[in-house]
Length: 482
Image (cartoon, rainbow, N blue to C red; front, side, top):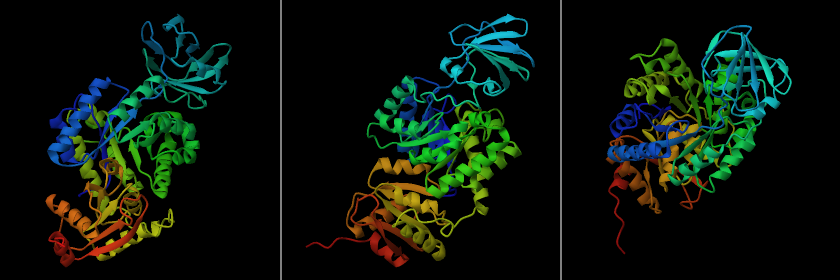
């Protein structure tokens, strides 16, 4: 594999066909995002079926992430767009109304979550139109009045942020519950939960899975999520640095340091982290990315992110395949100077973690061609990835669901399913599968990890070095007849 950092591409009108999805996979996409802020269940099912068909046609494995929209706070409908100027007053009512101009320099609107207005305090800020218009609260008396501090045009249904207010609303709406049920029924691999505030939000999301083994990603896009990050991570399978709303919820100049902090925490804990929003935004319309965007992707890679995400660029952009190809090239070149070999930088996660740390050091010291990781739950492959070896990681599992989940893990190439239980047959199947995919170098050395008893999660306890002679032996191995 020519890159280790994964690419998550959002699918949309410009990219949901089988032909384009196949092109995105060939260009370097490892996962696909279904954005449930838009589109019907029928639309997303058609896209999901196209992903499956593309996987089958290319004989490869990609992951599917369902992005749950969450309780996006918006202004109500307006009679007409408002041109708001510095010093204008905007009044927020609890009643649902059509917004109107009350008098010169005074406007009245409603929001779709009126209970939030009870939590707002004097001198707190309210941001309108997804952060482009700033207003400071000046009066609270059954309604909330705020003074506009910069020029902007507000239209119907635009987003509202309360960066100083703990809004404490249910982050999973009725629509979200129905969408999660759809994801469970259709076996998506990851669920991204929006506007998470604390660990309890993720517990509720987990309960809605009803025992389904999908992975939960907490989208970190609120200031209170940053403050509660440790408890959120305890209840999650991964996190996303969702820089869009996060850049409104916290001071813009704090976003880079928060990104680095979140990635470091995820790396230390051994869970995947996705860096998202505006990574190559200019390529939505343009053939080439800006130098700043290229540096942004490269810095996320160097920070240690597992995944970089594309949104509008791949969903509605002029040339989604070119965008993914560009991102792949940035990643590949940046990884030439990546900080590999982190065996000495982390404490062991548990008593078996010494196996994974040893495997990465052994493989790198030997100049091995690959690490063959047979994993029941996926955890041993994730732990190997945590130490960031230079050696490619080829993962084999007993269940397809586990294999798909590894598409979000740095450096892990999900290869195939192993049903065999006997050691010789397991090694044979792994090596033959690699060979069939054109990934096996029979002149090189490989390091394999397996667990006994076979199939028991967390039992990886054996390391085997496979020399060229042993590779030849296992490929041609035939069980003796009794």
